[in-house]
Image 1: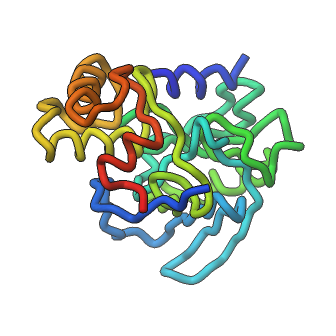
Image 2: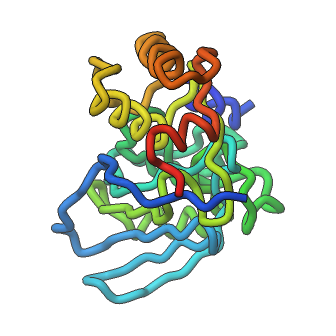
Length: 220
């Protein structure tokens, strides 16, 4: 919920290990597709697999990252407000409101400065809006725990994201969490995490720290 609010507010030393996590997988049946590479601040449009457009973008900062995975454009809208620029392409991310949109902060393009959405220059998003139909597959590249060389973010109640979903999955597999692995850190996740922390002689504060990641086998 916190990240949803943050996205709406736009209007007015250890290497993470790869792990078995659940992310949405989307079959590609359309003519067009979009690939977003957050580390390169780059959005690529493909037509029948061939690159036809490349745009510079801004993406989420480390505390509110752009979600990793495969999604679809499920909504197209105009003039959501100055911070969103003239066009919005909404994605079906299950734990919050995310989209590709314009901005009134063009200086942010090429940086990790959004609250998770993908920002484009206004002229670019208007062009993209006219090209891309509803249902287009959008692949957001990266690792759910962050890029190599960076520690994963600390997590607590109110956070959302693929990393939360991964923690829920690991706690569930260990017998601590009985809820839905939906990427939303609610009270039930806090309760499960505190029990896990107590059983593993960690401070039962309900915060996913580096030690918790290690105990769950998510860091090398």
